[in-house]
Length: 84
Image 1 (cartoon, helix red, strand yellow):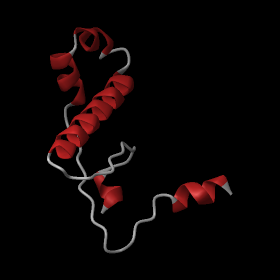
Image 2 (tube, helix red, strand yellow):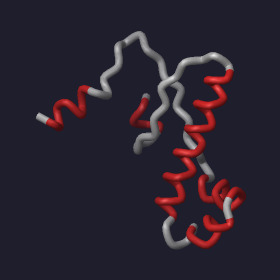
Image 3 (tube, rainbow, N blue to C red):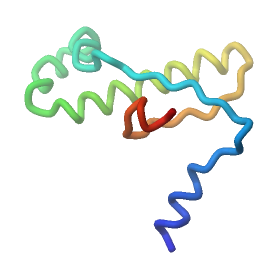
Image 4 (spheres, rainbow, N blue to C red):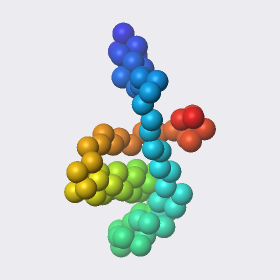
């Protein structure tokens, strides 16, 4: 049952559209923004990638909120091919 609920939570009405952003260089972004990321990039690249994606999503949401745009932003695993 939990799996069915999980799948249903991602269903969208047909008239909704989404903007999908793929960060191509998360490790480079992390290295530029954090000294710790420079050290951890080789040891925990998936953790660094996830943290960069979460931070970017937060900054986008904050920027859009300042413009008066209501959004729902989430970070999910997947590829652009799966989204189209």
